[in-house]
Image (cartoon, rainbow, N blue to C red; front, side):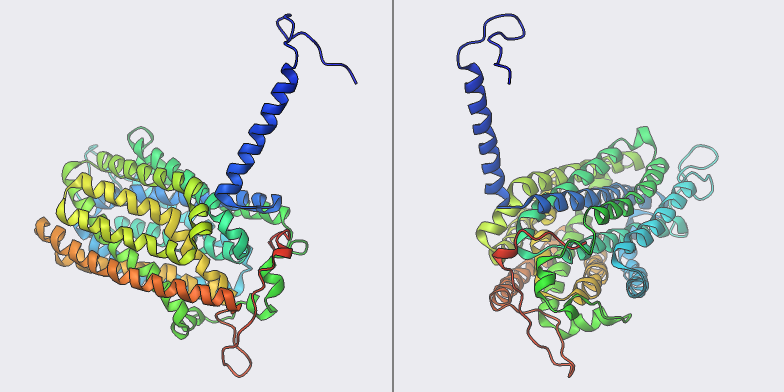
Length: 503
């Protein structure tokens, strides 16, 4: 070994003890950084961090594509069909996604889980690219042969198709991600991983919204085409994940302790609907997911009506919606990194579930007394940001005490059908009171307040049921040969924490 030089790079003599002092400072800094990580996310193994990185990257592309398309969706629909037809579009989307959901449940029976991303994302990729081509048409697109915008009309079918495609993508592909993730992780590690994974989704969302803010420079059809191509990245990430975590080598902790029947997805087009109706616990998850969407739909339409009045052109309104997406997902990103895992681990799931509807009661009251565009902008930023960073991860953990049939079949009905049904219900409210705008602001706020109070009571009951199920070690959805529900232990043993997840 060579003795360390007494001189630095400039030729001056190094102070005595400088190297020792620098080493101590480096070690203290490293210990401090690890202490911060443990404080925010708890004890996570190296394999758990690697797994979280894969899923964070996957969610980044899925949500990034969705938010780019979502930010374009309303501005394109307003220019092609007319914003006044949006409530009807949300109601019709319920029928469309119901058909898509039935087809998806059939695909789940045929295609292996890890191949679902290739099939679903490939289909949406082709659809988005085709939409991009049609938007450049001088007959069906945004601009006519004379270079002027084509007048909006409800008879322009491209606007309806693109709207339904984006709505179903946001429900189906995001739901597929959480279905797959919930089948791969255990409860203990999920409390630390979900914050990091959600943060990846928000990075993608901010990127997608930022691209839409520059829609004048890039072009709306070009952004649609880019989104279609980006859909193909998700299956590649899943394939890389499977190479890193081969199914035969890595076994999920909860998979080891649960019976094999708990990991089997029962076939049937309406199996998920049957499980949803049969189990009150699953119905509670449905209520938590759906009721918030009713409130969000009402507040979202209120903001868009005032925003469209202030920004009349397609590009300006798209930039406004892109700015909204940037703000909401920035809030979500910051909270995902600093607050999600910390809050869930230290306060427990039940108080965390109740925290979000409590905030809804407060912000709906603010909108009732201050019904302005920028007030609604701030309120929507707050509830969307905390919904993605806090409400969604805590809601997803409720599936940890269920079988894979519920995770894949019932959850698809909850996220896709329930999400569309709740938005359709919210659209009934906005369509009823949309004129004059004063009625929309007054009655829409009253309905939102009533639903928020009901949601607060439901989350309290559901959180208490989750604590009981976790303590007793029960799995919701386990049926014996006689068809009666039986209880199976969930052994979240601390001794098996170092086991890596199953792919």
